[in-house]
Length: 438
Ligand code: ADP
Image (cartoon, rainbow, N blue to C red; front, side, top):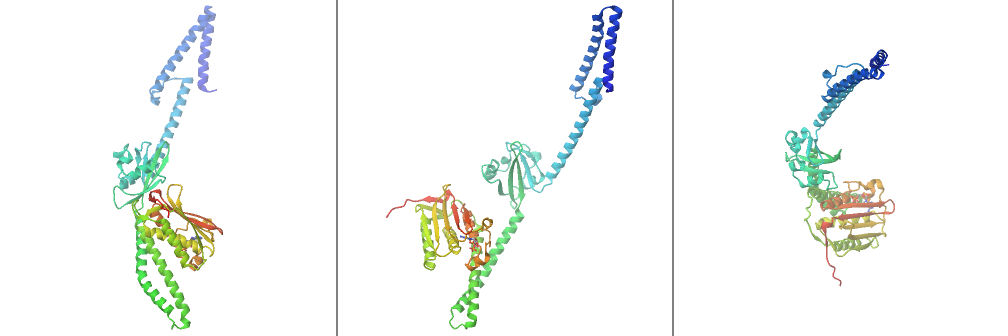
């Protein structure tokens, strides 16, 4: 048995012995038991009082009550718990400061916000690129310090996107990608990454492609012109006829690639505002294009089946919409067998926007290629694309045109069964007109 308990039982034994002795010597048994028990209870109460006072004053080691027996044991237990607690606290503090030092050293600006969007913590990078200084801005609303409607929408989750590109409020030359992540008790973690270098490289690459295409175009036009002249020259020796014809075809193909690259770089330069463009009579444009296709191809090549909402027009850049329709229609023709049907539909779509869908029953596309079709020069089958005069840039152009108009491209396809390409324009681009019969 524990030493402390032995001491405590000895005390009780003394009380009982004293009670018996008093009872025996005086004959008053009740009094005999009452006097030692009262002394023992009184002593215990004094111990409890001292113990309660010690705990109330913070249970400091140097102020521990001077006790023995079971009370000493309880004080020892409390000391042990306190010691463990101190060690745990020191460990946690160490971990917290190491964690804070790590986050502070992160190259990305990091800001922690509470549920009221007030700043709870930020690192050094946040000061550099967002201008948030924790020593001054602690407790301030983040959206009061950086006043941007798009940022407020991002923080309040009013936009689907959780990422945003913005110019640093501290340095106009720095572009940031800001990401908002929810965590904990409605808290938010805002991180901002400096992507200026990546954007500069992208701009450089685009400028290089645009300049190279532009510079190559003129000499190529001259070469291709001469080759074409030679190709139709009846006096050309038979032995060189075939190579000249082939060189002329290749020069034309290269010219088409350069033209498409130039179109793409122009599309990448400009995004359109919501108000941009003019009213485009889509029913007329689609009818014109399909009829041109029918005329330019051998009779019976493909049959177009039109389902057009005659009253549905859009506000857009006409030359771009023309290029979009042309690319989708020519792909349907290129990648489906002559004699098959191509269904062209122009109508309202679910979200109030307008959609042009081109459906063919051609070779179709395997699922693994679909997400990559709008990449530059991505072709499912390079030889097949070359055979039909493709450049691998058509769908990339279509995607950019739609993005510039706030729309998107939907691709559905099944290998061996056919494909449907749907160009969707947002509701704010649509304008309906009354159709007058006759
Ligand atoms: P290309 O000039 O090669 O046609 P695009 O960018 O227009 O380039 O199309 C990319 C690739 O997508 C094509 O090479 C082809 O493999 C595939 N593709 C596009 N449209 C269709 C279609 N209607 N049916 C089947 N495959 C298609």
